[in-house]
Structure formats: C-alpha cells, structure tokens
Image (cartoon, rainbow, N blue to C red; front, side, top):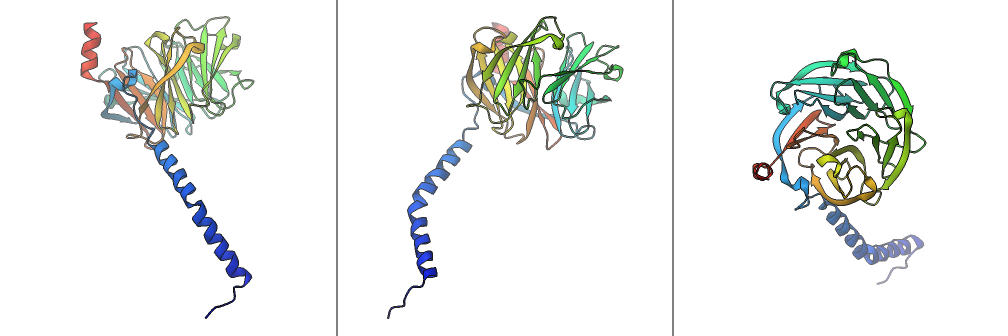
Length: 305
C-alpha cells in the first residue's frame, strides 16, 4: 500500500536528506573546535615552561570587584590591585616578601574615571598611573607607596589609537610606554619626549597580534625588556614574545604560551616578582591573586650561571 506525499511530507524528506549530506562536514567542524580547545597547553622549551602553580593565593574579594592589574613595591612587601567595578586601588601588606598568601588588607583609595584596568608605579613610589581602556590617569603620591596620599589625577587621552586597551607598562627610563588593545589585537609603543610625562607621548610602533590573541588583558615586560608577556583571557593563556632588541616590539616574535585554565577561566592582571622567580595572575570570578613560581631546578641553574 502506498500513500501520496503532501507538500509538508516532501519538505521533511528533503530536510532529512540535507541533514544526512551535511553531517560529515558538521562532525569535521566539531573536530576542529575540539582540537582548538586543546591548544591551551604550556609550550615546552619556552621561558614560562619553567614555572608551575604553587597552590597559593590571596583572597581580594572583600575589597575589590572585577579585579584587574596588580603591581608590587620593590621589596615585595606590598601588592596593589585595581578593582574595576569598585573604582578603587587596594594595597595589601605581606608578612613574607613575595608570598602572596601572607598578604592582609592595608589601605585603599578611590579612583577617578571608570573602567580602570592597568596599573603602574614608578620605582620610587611617588607616581602612579591607572589605565581606563582608552586613557591614562597620572597621580602623584606625597608619601611614597602610600595610596592614601594620592593627588588629583591628570588624564591623558589615547583614543586616537587605542580602542579597548587593558594594561600598560614602561621601560625603566620612563621614556617608552606600551599599551595593549584587545579589540584591535595590537600592542602600541610610544616614545615620551619627557621622561614619565605621558602627555609628551608619540606613537612609535604598532605591533599587530590579531592573528594570535583573542582577548589580551594584561601586559608585562621582563628579562630587561627581552620578553613581553600578555595575559589572554579568552585563550586562558599567557602569550610569550621574545624581543631580539630590548624594549623594541618591532623585533618581537611569538614563542610560546603558559596555560592558566587550571586555576581560572577569567585571568586578568599579570605581574612578576623582582627576581622573576614568581609571577601572579588575577582571577576575576573568584576574587583571588594566584601565585606561580620557578621550579627549584631552574632556580638552582640560574644561581650556578
């Protein structure tokens, strides 16, 4: 016995045939996605591969919300954190230098503007900069490293080049400034006509990292300007770039990643200890600063050298 097919039945049959035809392509696409998700691994042989998570952290959820960048005083006895949603910078005092788990709340200060992300202190602790996505606030401290002595901030606009930046860094002389930008997939390099005066900044170079990054939200130079590290939230990795000429990002080459997904899916700020034997990643969703450390074997090798 046969039944005549109406238009609706014919449409369902055509849809089924189309689905069967497309199934292999869909499965292949899913396979590609799975492979991409497995890319979040630490690159063997890279500088960052010498570090591991130390299973220690500092809870900052009581004083900050949506925490971003961190910065340390030279002795490692004070760490500062920017709270984007709380519009503040918070200081924590450490009873054991560079050991973030020994930190306790010390002080906080309200910040001007909004969308605060980046943070930098001059080495003498008398000047502080806060980056708020497209511009930078400059603050003076009448008492070094005491954020309760902040002056009124002066704002410098970088929106002519920067669309959605998150962090900043300077070279040691204060004559070169760097800004990341996740929307443009770029790192900007500025030369300052007057040291530490960002109002005198002139764009020198624009590094295109759009084919590598997904959402960079942290920027840190180490190894005397020979390594540039970027915290990529969406990749859940720290991206490593080696520079053949220190502090010249035109010579940067992408050389590896470090996976932080085991600790946080929302990595934000990135900072290193003075001797670069520890580094720290801010976790937005848990309100913590996680600590990573150089493996003992690598530390012994460095001392021997």
